[in-house]
Image (cartoon, rainbow, N blue to C red; front, side, top):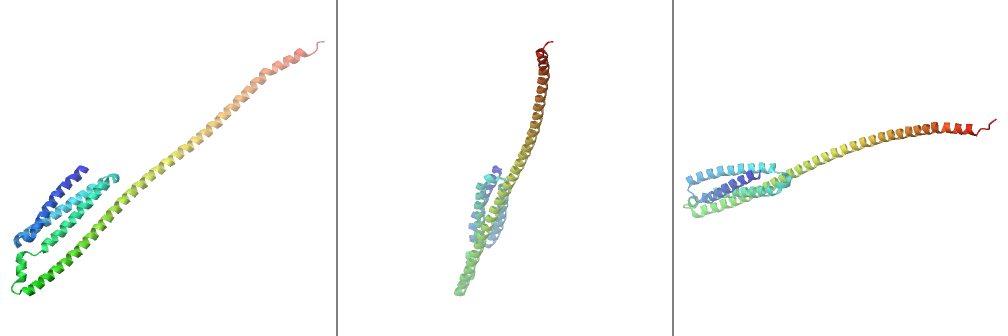
Length: 222
């Protein structure tokens, strides 16, 4: 299990390093190369997301008592993925020298004002995007904690149910033992009573002739 997770980790590290390098190159590329590079980065981002999904599935298969360390690593990788997506969005809307020259053109002041306005709108858009991503990460982390808590609670309930069944079986065995002891006690008491009666009868049978003989021997002779 852990070997599969570590293999996905290595693939994710290599892939994110390539994506980071390509994102840094996007703003400096000519339009045609930039378009091709953007498509390539989008494809690799999807591959990185698929790796994260595979890693997440592996973590869910790990026993709860050993899952904490892997869950923390997953949160770190998801944050890294979110940062890559944010950087990619910034690189896509960053202005190349060619676009900047077109905006400035002949009417420098008007184009410069447009450029400033576009930059402000871009900064506002990025700020809102980052807020949404942070909220999404917090919700995802909260959901993960809730899922883990539910799993732990379910396991505790199952353990309690098993313990209750063991206690009930022990009580039933105790009742059976008490019943058997009561029955054995009654049987033993009956046996002792019968033995006492037999002993008393034997003593009576033995002593009666002796008493009669003594009476005969002690009677006066005529």
